[in-house]
Length: 326
Image 1 (cartoon, rainbow, N blue to C red):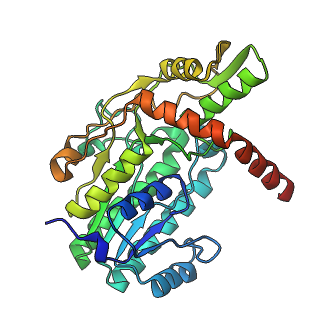
Image 2: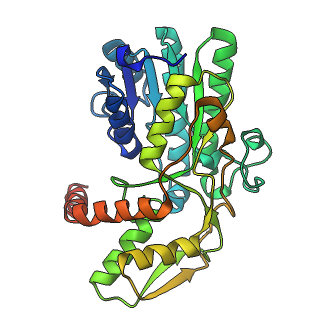
């Protein structure tokens, strides 16, 4: 039986973020009205006091844990300790104090970065422990995988209904377009747009373009998460993806064409490629709670491009304000 979420008090950590906003919109579309978002200025979830205050004041029955310290390859290389500590401490404390508070369900969002570097394609959930993650983002991936172990241990000892979902790379309107912390699609899209406007003849991208990635449109991901909350109560992790892959080189060419950039795509091979291939087996999600992605890559890229062009001026103004205040 599906859980009736309309009667539940639901808290979404990271609810002001990219995926968080999409999840909240999906919950509201399902008729949910009791949705709490613990804002960082009120609750620092890296601290015990922040987590205690969150549970005492919001009193959630269901927690969707999306909050994370996250970024692209460059950010992972520059801040590996921060990425490990922040993600590990937030998750472990939220799960521990959640079970003490007697919550009904804890929904932990993992990461595809947890998979071993040379996982056979398509990635099956059973392969999670068959090797070490790709080195550039291993601290982040391992911190997230730690929460899977905790979720399963707490289910066995305390009966906590904790589920663990593994979304592949996300993209869509409202993404992070910072060139220092963004992921591949928004970074490429911004570089192409800025080069076209400035009439530059080339842009430089990391690696050699040979690695492959799978991308899931953010609204599809949000729908999958809500379906899992309603219908899935299992201990095993579940992939959320689109079920296909594209090379970074082909992706760059597609984004260049979409933005109208006709210059040269140069590849900086001194920079890392990241994991060689990434594509998920999504059969468990379909079997367990009926999830399948609906948005094609071309549809998603077009919507993302249109959103960026509409909001570009505001995004640049915010970046300038942040730089002036730092």
